[in-house]
Structure formats: structure tokens, C-alpha cells
Length: 366
Image (cartoon, rainbow, N blue to C red; front, side):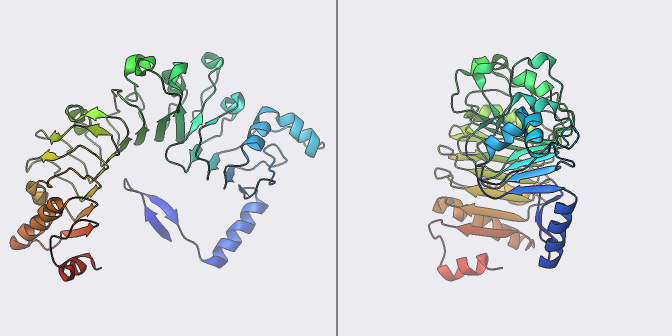
């Protein structure tokens, strides 16, 4: 049963009946489909008679084992399975949970041709690829999903990206030793040649400009510190459906939207934009917008009333904002009710009350 949906379509998480789950776990062990590392003393052999396709490290404490397995596979095989034949690694998925630091991958990562997903669940951490002899390293042509940490001093971002031609979901973050932005491709990381890229998240690229692929469907930005004048580059993306502007992604007091921007956008989330106080839009902006979320934009004065005219709008969520923002959203809803539109739902939390508690409870009830 699907329990969570991705904003750009498809299942994000599923639930199983306990009996079905028990059967799946047993079958996964029999077929060596998945190996889960629960504790520090857990061991796994990537080069056994039938090495696992998926490995999940639940607490981030087994990185040393993971690295040794990749760096010295023959040592571990002789040590543990001296009679088994040498087999190439077949690992497809490595998922790292509970680790909030960037992790430098061993150089033999480039030899795992089957690798499809390399992901960490911590949003602001990722894997650092080795750059030694990068020109002669084979590419990971099957890699689909990647949490990537960038060391800007290496000047190798673009070289690394060319080795990953079929990425569809990419999350990039700067390492904590970030230096001057001019060290990366003249200050403009180029993502526009990724023909398959659908989802991109960028964190801590302070002061950089970007080029995005036209087929991009989801974009998440945080700590980018771009001026609002640069958002038109994003507004021109024809297939963008989900945009999340979080925590210092854009700086400045005013966002003045231009005609015809965001033609396909369905979901817009604004969070933690600290000096954002004025938002100007027109009736032809967001023709397909279904959901608007505004969280912790403390300086924002109001949500533009014209957004109520978005023909597909179903939900506006406001949290941690001013009383005036809550009032403007309530006014949008009332205007739509007066026009016969009772579909629009308003959810307001942690704002200074603009109405009686009974009215607020009624609006926030299921």
C-alpha cells in the first residue's frame, strides 16, 4: 500500500501487512536481495557467492567496513570465503541512514558498474567522489539517484558530473570547507546537459549562478543566497512542477514576478526567507498551481490576492508567519467562496490569531 506519494509522481514509501513483510524479509535473505546493517558489529560480504544488490546502513557506523570491502575485496573474500570464485560486485543500491557528515568514497567506486542508487537520508550530507585519475575512470552509466557532496577546492565538479550521464535525481551540497565560488566552472555549475535529470536539490552554493536542464520537474534550493532578480531563470523552465525555496535560498525584500513565468508549476513552498516582505504577482502567474506552502517567512506582509484566481489551486498552508499573512490568506478564501468556489482549503498554524479560536478550529479540522 502506498503511504507517501512523490510530488512529481510515483510512490515515495509503501506499507506492508506484517505477514507479507515477514515473507519479504525471508525471501530477501534467501535471494541475497537486501542486506541491512543494524549495529556496529554487523558484517556484510559484497563479494560472496551471491553478493547483495542492496545494502542499507541504518546508523552510519559501518562506513569503515563498507570502504574496506570496496578497497580490498580479494582480502575479505580469502579471509572469509576462501573457496568461493571471484565475482564482480553487483551492488545496485547503497542507502546510508543516521550519518550527518560527508563521506569520501573509495576510488574503486568507479568499478561498480551496476550501481543505481547512492543516497543518504540526511538532507545536508552526501558522498564525495575520488578525483584521482578521473580522466581515465569509467563512468557510472546506470547511476540514477545520488546524494553528492562537493569539495569546491578540487575544481572537479564538472568532470565528476560528466561521469554520471543518466542521473535522474540529484542532491548536491557543499562540503564544510567551502572556498571561493570562482573555483567551480567560473562560478556557474552546469547542470543543463543532464538530459535525464528530473529532480535537483542544491544546498550551500552561496553566490553561485546556475544553468538548469529544461526538462527539470522538481527543484529545491537552500542557502544559495540569490537575489530575487535571478529567479526568472527558474520561472522559464517549461516543465518545472515543484519548487521549494528554503532557508536563505533567495535574499532581498521584494519578489516581483513577471508575466508568463512558471507555466507548469503545481507545488510552491517558501520557508525561512528571512528578509522577504513584499510579493507581487499577476493573475496569469501559476496557471497550474495546486498547492502553496508558506512557512516561517516572518517579514512577509501578505500573500498576493490574485493567487486565489489560480484555476487549479486547492490548498494554501501557512505556518509561523505574521497575522497579516494569515489575514490575507483568509481573505483569499472568502473571495473564492463569494465567487462560488468552495474547493480551496486553508490551513493556518502558529500565526497570531486573526479570528476567534472556534473559527480557526473549524477551518483546520479534517
